[in-house]
Length: 102
Image (cartoon, rainbow, N blue to C red; front, top):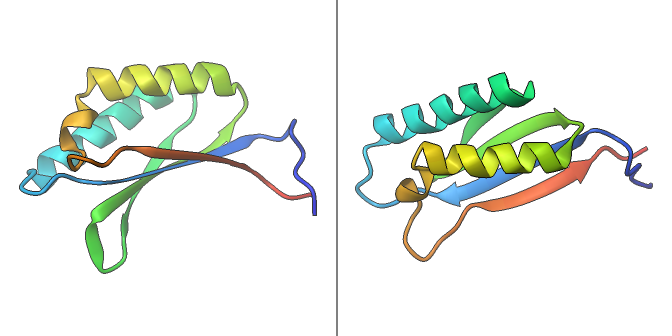
């Protein structure tokens, strides 16, 4: 199995939310960032929560063609929407990028 580097990219970003964070507010902040990112890049994100562990969240972005522009817009969106404030202290947003096997 090999990965085709010219393929569309798929991003998986996971993190633990801070103890005591208002989950509804945090959810709204992430979704608002994803909506703005979608308008800017054309890539619509999805938000997941780990089964049986609701403090681990994952954002998924499929079909990214221009990784540089996407990652820049994502960094800006995270800052503009204050998403670092919902991350558990000592933790971070972990970003992984995958391509489909061919």
